[in-house]
Amino acid sequence: MKPKLQLTPKNKVKVRASVRLAYVGATFAVLVATAFLIYYNLGDSEKSIANEQTYLNGFSKRAPLFISNDIIRGQELLKDFPVLINIKNDELKHVSKGGFVVNPKGLDIRITKADGISSLASQIESYNPNSGEVSLWVMIDSLSEKYGRDLFLYYSNSTINSDLPAVIWSNGYQAIWHLNGNAFVANTRKIKTTAQGTSDTEGKISMSKKFSADRKDYLSCGYVKELDLQGSFTISTWLYLNELNKKQVILSNQGDLPQGYSMYINENNQLCADFYNASGKLIQFSDESDSEILDKDRWYHVNIVFSSEEKKLTSYVDGIADRFATVIDVPHPSAAELQIGRNQFDKDSYFNGLLDEIRIANVPRSQLWLATVFYNESLADKLFSLGASEDLNLSAEAQKASKKAIMSLEDENLKNNSKNNTLNKTKSSGSAQVPGVLSNNAEVLQARLNNIKRVADENN
Image (cartoon, rainbow, N blue to C red; front, top):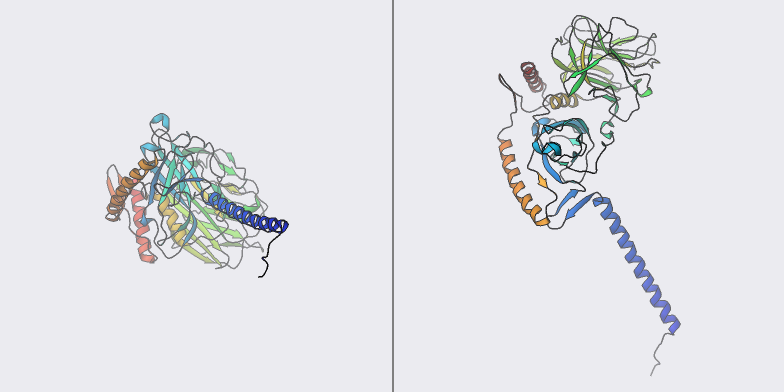
């Protein structure tokens, strides 16, 4: 008989210790990885196993926010698009007025994607604690016909006392002036804007700046390298003319030398732009015969787009291309400061009227982008609706029952919305039909935007 193989106590302890160590190490690694995944995905949320729904931490209320399918129609995918949302709801009143919003400036109003936890960059434009009306900018990461756009609006959080960082304006934007009761820049760029005169008045979007040519009003922005545009760019604003038949500069960084760029209204009441090239030659639109003639006492959304890649300078009025110029040069650098409302070396160029929502970007925006901006900001109170709210302080079972009831209401709302694809802009003396879908077809696009202009005229 062969002798039995026996391990010595020393060998026995050694083998078992190594196995145990390996097992403990593997288990620890799994726990660490699991904890990391849980923290990464749910670190700012709570998940109820009972109703399989995830919520943001610290909020007592939320409601689904629906974006009309009519906001955009086109093959292009608009990335990181800042949407203007206007919502009025009794629950959005301040707690002292019978609502649920805790912060008196509405800062505890936040937006997420449809999953309920992926926060979207947002910025409050205005908030009325008495009426529960809020106007806010929300960056939609992908806006097109093919991508879902249902969101969640969260509110009622006593721990929030500050606004979100202005990353909403990071998609090529160099400067944003909301002109909402001040001249501050709304993005993270440090630009000190000093008002020389001007006054605050009701604007296209909340408040605006009123410029008086008689008082020689303007805004001084100083020299900022990022605003010394030397390549592709888009300059946009809402404007309201109080005077016609004179040159009125919207903004300019042209100094006493042939340098820089300028955006203005000419003596024929047409949108214009020009810039100097490296040789000191003034680059501008040559033919003004077919350009739209602007009138006073109404709002226009105007844009100047320069594409160095396409070698084209284009003006847009209310989302429609107005004029083109083939350009082989780029703007020559300017040492002068940027001024809004005048050209500092042209004493007769003061702007006379209202300006609102001025934007400067170092990328050329497409026509679909600009048309969507015009449509969205013209009808910001018609393109969005708020569903039934959820009380996030309820028990798991109560939340599940509430969720079921809310989903039923939402299904009913979706059915009703599908029957009403045409939006209506209503005023006290009657109503005007708002155009339907936004098509890539130029004739359809033109008809739709002309209809928006008619609605705007009737409601001014």
